[in-house]
Image 1 (cartoon, rainbow, N blue to C red):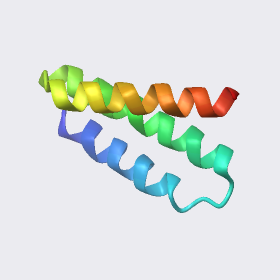
Image 2: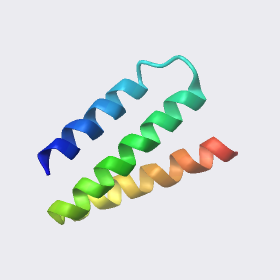
Image 3: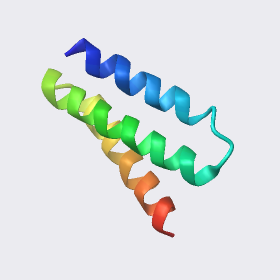
Image 4: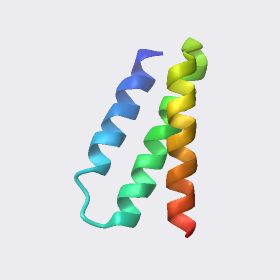
Length: 64
C-alpha cells in the first residue's frame, strides 16, 4: 500500500515541474487518483476528501 503513496507523491511533485498548465493539471489529477486509491485502501478520510476535492478541481479546470 505504501507504494501507492510514493507513486502519488512522485506524480504530484512531477506535475509542478511542467511548464504547460494543462499537463500540470493532467499529471496532478493522475496523482490525485493514485492518492485517492491509497486513501481508500488505508481508510484515511482526510486523504480521501483532500484528493477527491483536488481531483474535481483539476477535472473542472481541464475542461473549462
